[in-house]
Image (cartoon, rainbow, N blue to C red):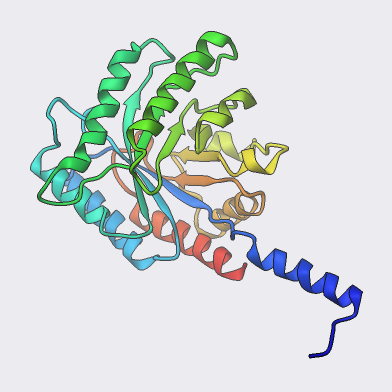
Length: 274
């Protein structure tokens, strides 16, 4: 076997290292806040159809039975059916909604809600496992009291879902927060507002790439059309923002199925180019 000249050998290992780097994946983060029956059932079916038709795209779906897990040990039969169907997809990661109301919810209450979601993994008849927690109404204060609270709920969540293959914690302040918080979450939503407000702002680009890949952007009241949607998603993808969602609704009271399909198609095409 002929030995490669030293410069060629260096180029070879550089190319090999580049090939071994993980491919960036822009996640579609979906707040699924509608009940899976009646009018709400169509939203669950639309989401399931989009997910099935875009297996190369990753979806992080927020489950919210009752501004939290609800009062019972397990959700009702409609949620059990809907959650189990979503869990059948390899490209879906489910997290449960828990409110913190800017650190005013007692820690014991937050822990109890986390415990309920974690207990869903023990349901025997079908797979309704939840893989982590979406902490809503997160404080954007930068002080020790806020740090202690958010680090505590995050650590409790990670320990509660330690058996999961992908334990996930999401913070939702809806605005930019101190960089300290990024050590305690997989994603932080640093923009949650109407698309009209986002248009004048653009991606809140963090200087350090690891933090950028934990950033998330949610724009509601959004109906940009296909060309504009492409123009919005391209810099989000190119700057390695971690997760995104855009919806026509203002309050996540449905699924804009055509728009979600277009978002998924655009992201899928960008990922195939890498």
